[in-house]
Image (cartoon, rainbow, N blue to C red):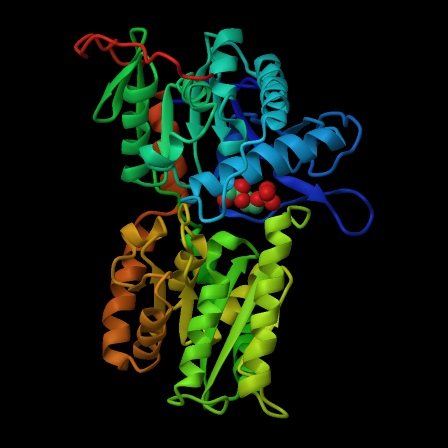
Length: 481
Ligand code: F6P
């Protein structure tokens, strides 16, 4: 258990700070999102510190307190934003970890900046962590931090959580720096993944490409026991339920329904504008549905909310172009004056507005090619207080493990997806209710608070006995690090 209340007893390191610059006035605002709201209460209670990048290539900023949390900004130069963030993190690791659904770029010039920025984060954490403190390192941008921090501060307990998928052996093996990444992560005491498969992939890779040996959830790193297992992240269920009960949100959802046409079935997609989300394949399936003539613009409509993301990376510019062409194509072919089949909103919406859309939507389309978890699926389920509505969910999302009563789709199969969406549109109310009840129970049982409690509990548990029973280690010759 975390007991002391000294500043730095609990330190979170993430690529981004939990705050961003307010649109007006230049002050700070807390960023929305499950991770921030889950960690905030424990961070406040333990005089926590959050180390992260402020999100722009600003010159160095001083540490500051905001709403009871101590923020320590790490600055990045323009070149580092290009090479560490847009390059190695988002053009090498991001596509590779998402099943290489875009070709990962192995650019040797990006590795040194990735190492340098990870080192900078580790140094700041080494300075900020209290003696025997606890440090939670977040995500793929910072996989070398646990190893670096352990060298600098062997007294601290280190947790690492990967928010995105961890790929199978044959894919990860492509990475020229695979051994260094694995060793970096192994600096942690607890390594958390979204799914059991992610954790298993990691243990297999450790056995293959490092001198350490793992079995089940445990890895023996020179006599130190490292725990690698799944901690599926979730949402603040009660917050979504309260928003879905708010009269203003309900009124707004009725307004949305009225604007779109009371008699039409409303389908909804809400995603960051990312090529992993399968938005273009979803639109192709919707095209097929209108094309086959069983539905027309008079009885069916899709609202696609696409939140702009990583707009300087080429692949993101390309996927946006593809999506916008498809929207134009569908609307041109099947729309009429006064009614279009696809409403496309390229912007971020406040959570109240999003929940109003969830309440208005009869069918929610969540169709990524690969996704670590997908919290939109869980938010939709939480908001459906009357147990109606159908969740169409890609089998390649982490949330498909828990949300197994959703209607599953393979986003690579356009005809199959079109047929399944049509079944979802036609699903009888009684079946909707049976499925949604079970889905809501799942989400209610495991919230983001359960996630934070389980993960921090594993980290703060007494150090287990060193592992001695694994087979002897062998070194893999010729591995580049
Ligand atoms: O899912 C991974 C993640 O890095 C999230 O932590 C983050 O909210 C999202 O992708 C957006 O990423 P970025 O920080 O690159 O805008």
